[in-house]
Length: 427
Ligand SMILES: *Cc1c(COP(=O)(O)O)cnc(C)c1O
Image 1 (cartoon, rainbow, N blue to C red):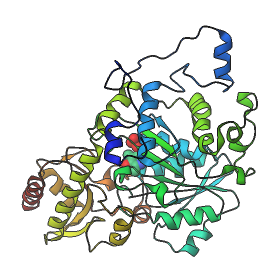
Image 2: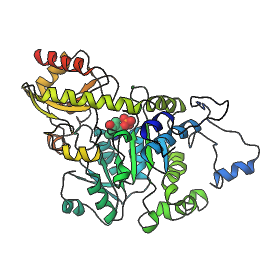
Image 3: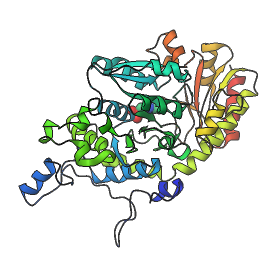
Image 4: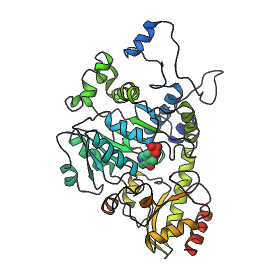
């Protein structure tokens, strides 16, 4: 399937039914799977044979949908997780433990920032947050001998900074570590980070991939390009025997292309159990079937709304990577030539108070802790998702106190613009 274009993969990837088999992917709603002998089951537990035995580790419906996302990203292996947060956590915890260090872009999703700066810090993993627009020298200076990965978002939520993937990949590789990219906002329809040197991609499938606000979920995809065996001391979890599997060494048994996802599945998923339910995976797949069509409309609406806001003198500033006036226009054109995303951020003249009054007046756009949905929604991050941050941290994360995050759905752009105009009239 991988020789097909992304639109074809969105519709048909991951699943090819045989004669008389269901056209739609079956929901295998079963916690467990049957075997005839204990010997056969024992082989599964020793990772000597592959097969399903318990849905906390793997489920066929989830694997079918993971295979589609894997094809979309051009990877070698993928797994679904219960949420985007679980995907971000697993992506790093799979290769880092207490005493290790990670370099991360400072403009990342608020939930990810909390996970890294507070929760994972408690687990003994230290993060250095760096401005994604930093120079090569500043980036190099952030690395330490115990650095295990670099992390960033293709388009940051909600700062809408665009990651210079090549710059970050080159820095990561010159220090012998992988680049992990959260590709939630761009989706593989608009950007495939592996083509620019990223090694691991994560997703909150809750956003555009699902696209209908119906199921929380996440995904991790491995490019299969990072050679862990070149740095066995740095990545002992992948390159030395795992005692919990009678001494299996993941890179030896599953190869460079399969080691990372296999370890995350059989070890982290086994122990932490952040599985996506087969029902949710089914809903996710329904969303994926129209992802390429929806993304085009999200981007058209995003650009139309951004242009209308830019032309309105009641608006203080507009941030959308697709605007020619935008700082990231050139980077967005390079990495996302067919469009970036449907999320536009802006400030209403009059600051925080005016932003709140404006949002109250909207009729089509609803106030929601959500983005990237077919229905337009908006949020004031400083008083919600990012409210744990002080003003200095907010600034560093690219979230201004007056910032309204406006997620354009797939309605008609004319109606969205008219809604914004009437809400501005009523401030
Ligand atoms: C929402 C989001 C997450 C977290 O995903 P959940 O599915 O809500 O756990 C991670 N990264 C980005 C960019 C997001 O927008």
